[in-house]
Image 1 (tube, rainbow, N blue to C red):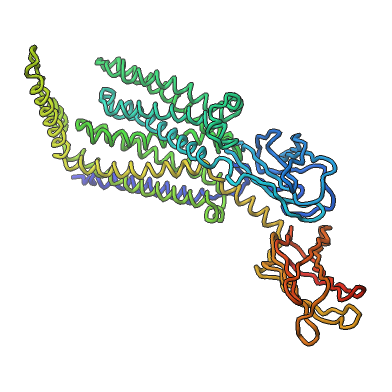
Image 2 (tube, rainbow, N blue to C red; image 1 turned 180 degrees about the vertical axis):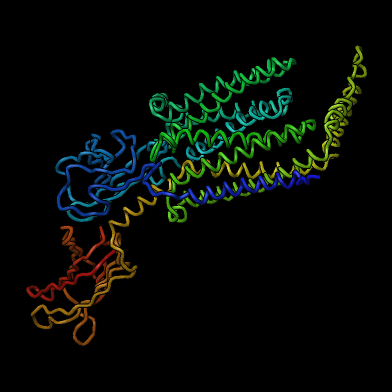
Amino acid sequence: MTATAPRLRTTASRSLTRLLLVTVALLGALFAGAVPASAHAALTGSDPKEGSVVATAPAQVALTFSEGVALDANSIRVLDPTGKRSDTAELVNLCSGDVVKYGVRLRTGIPNGTYTVAWQAISADSHPVSGAFTFSIGAPSATTAVVPTQAVGGGLVGALYGIARYAAYGGFVLLTGGAAFVLACWRRGATVGPVQRVVVGGWLTMTAATLAMLLLRTPYTGSGKLSDAFDLNGLRAVLETKPGAALISRLLLLGAAALFVSVLFGAYAKRDDEAEKKDLTFGLAIGGAVVAAGLAATWALAEHASTGLQPGIAMPVDVLHLLAVAAWLGGLVTLLVVLYRSPGIERAAVLRFSRIAFWSVAVLAATGVYQSWRQVGTWSALLDTAYGQLLLVKVGLVAVLIGTASVSRRWTARLSEHTAPEADAALVVEERASEPEPVTVPDDGKDAKRAAQLARQQAALSTAREKRIRDADPERTGLRRTVLAEAGVAVVLLAVTTVLTSTEPARTQEAVDKAKAGSQVAVADRPVDIRLPFDTGGQNGKGTVELTLDPGRTGSNDLRVSLEDPAGKPKDAPEVKVSFTLAAKSVGPLPVVPDRVAAGQWKASGVQIPMAGDWQISVTVRTSEIDETTVDKNVKIG
């Protein structure tokens, strides 16, 4: 006699093998390379540099970005110390090869002082970016220039746009996943009201969200004012952009999806002939797959996948990723609705969805590995950037979801093993038997109130019977609970995915951080303290000057100067001046005249150190009308 291993053990072994293969692929390929890539545009350099001091006014201000950007004449503004615009509002394209560089020309004869550069652009992946920095001509000065404190794409408009983006993803998942569940797992579901509501609700949600995003696009990438959502000129400009074209294409495809849904829940649901229904199923499956892939492509063509490293590969991979998400999570929500609202679903349908869900997860793992490598690239980027940290949260949620799904698969297997096929038929018969008897209302209307009350009682009894049918099957009850848990985790997972699409990818963020760090001198974070003897040559001209620059780094500092005589007592003087010179960059001398606050003590606030380097600090002390001296010392300031 030949011994046969139990089927359940074989199935578990195969599942474990598949899980190990997916895990090995994930760990082996996640960060297999470090080829530069980007998604959100980021400012990687400027001329003049941020915080620098130049001797004479430059002819233009130029900005270098990490990727292609869309700009107009108002995208780069240079404001003088009084807040007036100092550029000619003429955008200059300085791009060369892979270098993305734009600038604006400055007006002639502009005065010395601190200038503010405010910029705003739309990156190639459709997300708005903005920023501001200062540089000085001659010497730093006070400035009253005001730049927006709210980042572009933020505020109320940004929140509404984010909600619409999440709703669009959710609608796509319900529409695509629900329809796929009907065609691939449970054809009888086309006649079930709750299933129809899931798919139609997904279509309505996605359509409304797409229209909202189209209207909000103008204020989202521009002024941030909600009233600009109805600016027809702005809407016309949006339609000429890649994101606008993607949104319009999505609306057109949703029109085709409406026709698909009407056939699915109309002609298809009414067909009784199995041969005809099989042919129609094939046609609907092909047409639905084309429409679903087109809808997924509207994201791939306008967001992260369309720019950076390997866009020709990244876009179809992104389409596959979105379709797998929809097949898994959309089918999961549909199954949950069916388990709670329609107790007559066949066990075979649940098993078919279980297999589809498994392969969807496999596709998600493979495409997710590629996307993670493309957007992250290194372990440091994964751990030290907001994008990488969000990605870790997403991976954790996926792990929880897979663990919960494995429990659901066990309940599904028990349904298959413990319930005979005849039970399905008996279940359907019991459902039909539980339907309430029709209520006849008398013609004279005298008993209408009693009849209505009786109808409500019969409806309540029918609902109670259906609930008893569902609760009488412990395996089905366990499956409902685990599927509900999966759906809850899926909602959070979709929210994290939505946030990821609007977060600076880790590769870009790390490259920008390194570029900024490379332009600075790393020094200890401590105040600069110097103590120097001086002798002006006159009577009582000897003493010691002590100077403190706090915090002793680039940017704004507090300056304190004190004088002591040879006996260590405070020494007053008619005048004390300080200057800073960075010879390596031909910056300075930058003069500072501190205010006298007490005998032998002077102070100045807001002393600007524009850049890091080896600075020469010079202190000039005058003890009489003709007696003065200058002492200096070189210090490293970060």
